[in-house]
Length: 393
Image 1: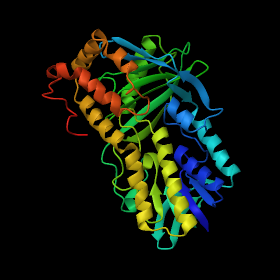
Image 2 (image 1 turned 180 degrees about the vertical axis):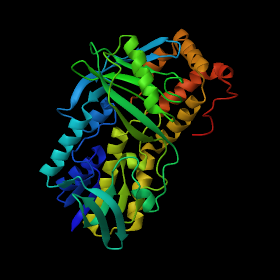
Image 3 (image 1 turned 60 degrees about the vertical axis):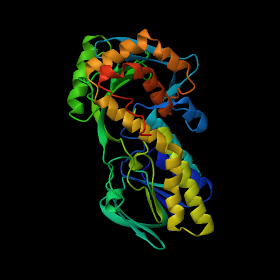
Image 4 (image 1 turned 90 degrees about the vertical axis):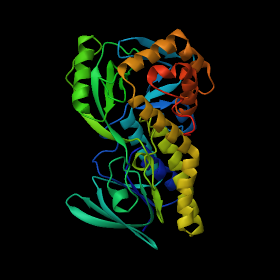
C-alpha cells in the first residue's frame, strides 16, 4: 500500500511526488502517456521569481527574457523591456522528465501508459482503478492527488464539480531565421478575446500559438500564413497541438484523503494561461497537507479542507482580478485596443508601469489595477461608466 498515489506526471504531479518521496513516503505516479513530458502544450515561459523560488530548472532553460514586443490590431508596436531578466524560456518536456527523474531518485515509482478510470475514496484510504497495457489493476493508498491537467473527468466523477469557464489553446513549432524577441499579438480577429504569441526558443526555432473560444486551429493556421507572408517564419506548414486552459478554479479541490492540484484544479493565471508557478506553489501546500496527515495519522476532512483555504489565500485574489480583467478585455473591439495603445504610448503609461513596484511577471493584480487607474480618465472611450473593476475585488 502506498502513502500517496499521484495521477499525472506533469510539473505539479512530479513535484508532489518528489517532495513526498524525499520525506520518505511511498509514492506511486500514474501517467496515461507513454512518455513523461509529452505532448507539450505550453510555451514554456516562467518568471524569474518562479525559477528562483523553485531551483528545479537546471538543464531545461533555453534562453533568458527581458523584453517583448506587443502589437495592436493596426500593427502599432509597443516594446517593453527591463535591464534585468524577467523570465526564462524552458524546454517544458525536458523539465518534466528531469523532475520525474528526481522523484524516482528519491524512490517514487512511476507507471507510464496507465490511465486512471476511477477513484474510490474510503474512510481508511483510496483505491485507484487503472487501465494499462490491455489490463486493469487496482492500487491502494492512504491518499490520492489528482494532477492530471485540465480536462480530466475524475473531479466531476468524485462530485467536485467542473470548471465553468475555459479556453482552448493551439500551438505549433516553426522555423525562424534568428532568435529575436517574444512577440504578442492583441487582435480580436487573430485570437478573439485573447492573444497570440511568437516565442523564439533555440536553434532557429519558435513556438507560435494562440487562445480562442472558437476554431483555434483555423485561427492558428491563418496566423501562420500571415507570419510566413511577413517573413517572420520559414513555412506556414506545422503540426498543431491543442490543450484546454481553465479560466476559473474547480468549485472544490479536496475531499477526505484526496487533493486536486495544478491545471486540474484551475490554479492557472486567467490573464496568460500560465500555470507552472501557481501549480508549484499549490503543490507545496498539498505536500504540507499530506505530510501532516501521514505524520499524525489523522487525515481528517478538516485537514484536507485546509489545503483549499491555504491555496486560495495564496493566489485567490490574483485569480479573481485576473478573471475580471480577462472578461473586460474580451469585450473590447479592435478599435478600443488601438485606442488603448495610443493612450498608453502617447502618455508614457507603459514606461510608468515598467517602473512601478506593482509590475510582476507572475502577480498581475497590481499592474491590472494600476493600469486601469491610468486609463480611468479615458474610460468613456471604451464605454465604461466607471472603473470596471472597482468594487469587485
